[in-house]
Length: 485
Image (cartoon, rainbow, N blue to C red; front, side, top):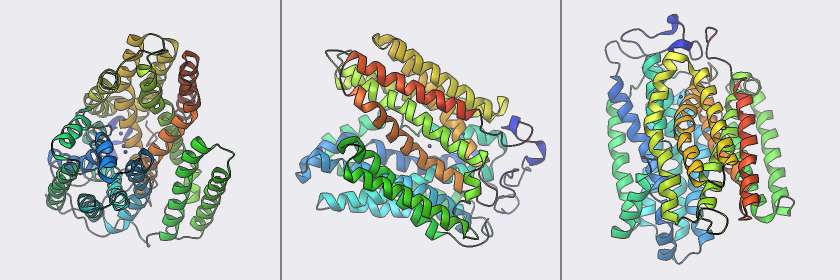
């Protein structure tokens, strides 16, 4: 569903007992002297929160067949259990990130966990699949915890600790080294899929208690004005139309009537959003910020990199590895063990390392190294697509450069480059860009990888290479968080 002292001037470093402030954000919410939380406690608390979302995302996947059997539903209907979850995540990130500027970070975190808890209880008790889907939508709101966590860390830690902490949070963005999905499968077989929701509910309760205890409440709201709910509604309409346009276009055809209608709705919602934001005194995000290098370059880099790399790791290589005729002929379980687990496991260690390195070589350099070497891995996979060990090595290396360096740097930069008057806006919008990029990448390569031929797999991989190359070019335009970077 989620990044330099080298880039931060000494004047911006926080005092010993004061929350962090920087050139982009100005003063953080005021905290009483001597009450600043310890870094380890704060990171652990926020980690519990993001795990509440991540386990909801990953542990349910192996339970989908049992959910379908339990409710007597086909695969298409069961797919909504996940699709609605991630759609809610895309919507909630921009809204909750910006709303937290007005109501405070701790209240926003607790509100998100509360909505997720309601959805989890509904999933536990749902007598029908439609009600379970509604519960999953409410659970998906918890995706906003990632953006909120990054903002809280920036406002309460010094620059060096912030880099490392972003890496730690980013490390669980793809799951707990692949073992969470395995645990979900075991729990489903032994106790039924409802047991997963019990675990998530318990974890959310613990996270809420820790947030109340350890996340600073702050003083007055950081932003003046009122929350832009019209902008939130129009942005939500844009994201919903865009999501359904991508899925409908890939299944029914890009020139089909439903796809064209959704495309028109997407364009109309975006135009209406921009028009509405120009009239707001405190917009969700000002239109002139969307045109600025510090905003659009971050969003574009995220969308393009996800479109290129996600499609390789989670679609093309998965199909290639299980193709017995023109691929490697591995079973589904062996394919996951060889091509999914290593990158996830490596990323758990590489992301905190990348966060630590941002303090030595800067956020921008970390981003460009991660994007460039991810591109190199993509090229290697395309060049040696017929060699399973070469592809395995390339995908495993993405655990370092994509899961580690890129995800850490882009998440951190989304906080550092967010507009001063709206510090929660860019992290939230950037979070929504992850799902958009991943969906677009799969849609673009699916017609070729789906052919099941060596040539088709090759074309799909080279398309991903081209998209990732575009991401690298855009990343060169991302500005440094301050003039000294």
